[in-house]
Image (cartoon, one colour):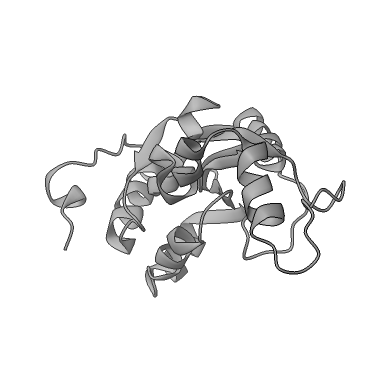
Length: 180
């Protein structure tokens, strides 16, 4: 049987979900025996690979770069998992949505409240353009599974990965969803 090709990516969020991923501790050694991690913020890989079996997506979609990354993820992944509450609901990243479109938020932050050098950052190729609002992943692409939590506990992440590696459909219910 071919080894699972696993990827993780990080959009608009705090990286807490990836820290919980690392909290799987010694089980990461077992994971390395069962799967090839082909793309992750922990590696210096510039281009999202083709033929990925499972991609865990952390964070909400807040700018053009996030959207482009997400489109690559969906195009090249058999299964996409919304990984953590920012990816699932928008969570903290989406707190700017009630404030209106991107331009008024940028103006308030970088012009009105600035004490030194007031200007909206817009260096092409360096500062990605904000989307008008922040979106959870499923509003931009098809998502196959969800791992809720802010951040999701390591045991919950492990449960989903174990099920996917075994070829079973992960079900998060009962004890798998219990916060504790």
